[in-house]
Length: 291
View: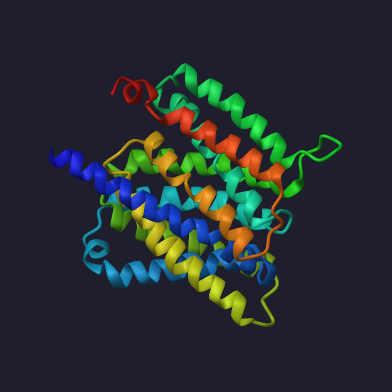
């Protein structure tokens, strides 16, 4: 009974994280319009590490070598993946990106197969094909070429699948709060070095851009990423991925309603097909139909 309660709390935590990230697509787009990608990451993750250090200083102070190692690995993976999502927003809309990102749910079972030798079930292959149809509706132009921003988003989705699987492996073995601190610190420090070496410093700091950075730092990272890291201690990678993927629906409607993204039946239809593929890949339909 206690395990079921923990799993329920983990599910609620992942849904809350998804809600945070749903609004984050708009914040990310505003930030990308005003600042360079690695500058955004430097502020976001260094600031998040500072918050974590203050809020959970006891966990950080008592961290082990394993906690630090796990955090540094996850932080390095995030440093590699995150720029693609930010850069993609220069070439696509938040609402389109929200649906395309959901494809990591399709990828996670296959990545787990590669890393953990857990072969996906047949429905995972069917869901993969269905997802490709949805991606085609969202992204393919009249010349059957995929848009640059959409392609970068799909690349981020692939890389983020590694983050989800790695988080699932580490969260069950180490202190997830200490791990989160070192994860954000690693991403932040690597981003600081990169922005100093390769990017021009921002000349102006518009309020909208600063507000977006604050949202990304606090809500998207300190709250959402930390909730994911803690919750994955009590559930599976695949189950986590489907709950997190609800961010796609929230992100789509936030983009349309709050940011003025164009509402197109084709994108909506493609997004719903992708989301249907997500549900098909992880929901235990057999158990539901037997009840």
